[in-house]
Length: 74
Image (cartoon, rainbow, N blue to C red; front, side):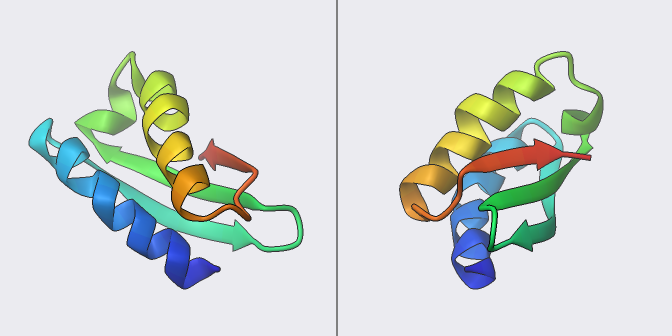
């Protein structure tokens, strides 16, 4: 599952990098389907980080990796 998550994040990264940010994978809990990420660069301090996390990253991960139930940021 971790490899699938990494591949899905690779699809999101160019959009984040275009705005000066990025996302790092922190952990994948396969038993609960929770993926933990860290938003970095300008994404880490952006007031829209929650929207980016839920509407961008989480939505993409759920589409690409059905086992993902939730994405959380640290």
